[in-house]
Image (cartoon, rainbow, N blue to C red; front, side, top):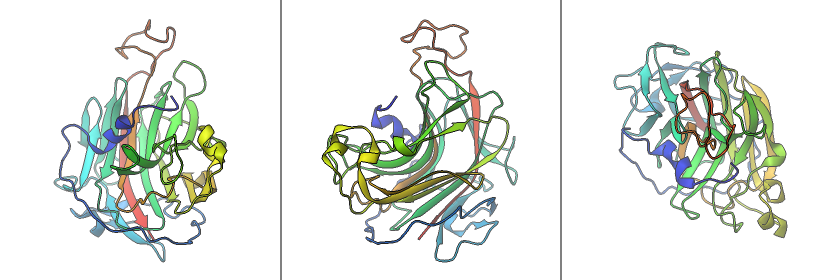
Length: 327
């Protein structure tokens, strides 16, 4: 549960059947002493008009002073996304007029087995350089949906082709309640670079700032992710010896908000080593991993690799009103 194949995380960016154009860039990250933003920036924000180039979409709140709109997507256009974006829908799904958060459409995907991804991503090269990025989106899951016995990703940023396979900064639910799926699990900031070295990569998890979060199926919720990557670090030898990111110090910071209320906040952290995160892939939603060993989620009993452990029943995940701003 704590470590799994990095390739699984990367599925958020390479979903089967999704639009495949990849845009690359070479903009360098500007090293800055910026302090993290205080408070949620986009509470209640929705996408009010969709442009093919999401940088020209409009949103329902003013872009905060000093920030710029990177992309906004409400899935209302025809086509619903541009070649610079990917949608991944798990077992089935797509852009639907059923159950939108705002406007007339939302993205939906279905989980009915392990290692499936439901999400949206903005390709590498679009984000450009930044000191801090904020990712806002709305999510709905079916009533009765449960977290699996392993991972359930909410999103973040991913820099491919470095640190072995990737360096990412993402939020992931991890289920420590036992072997069974559950309505509540633990939200953790995870980094999936090398975990056998510190600078310039980071592969430790920020367990010390983790917090419980309920699935809350049957209602729309807004998630807002703030990320200020680290550009300098002062890791101790214990950083290499543990899987606890609190042993790894730097000038990075991150905050996670639910419906405008702060759930997680960290400062003075090494969250990506000194890896340049400019032009990262930006993703919301993500992969679900299940370690029960049940081949079919339709089964009412399981004699898999973890006998007695039951995966969640199949459920749909809806995503709408994705907004990315940076400074």
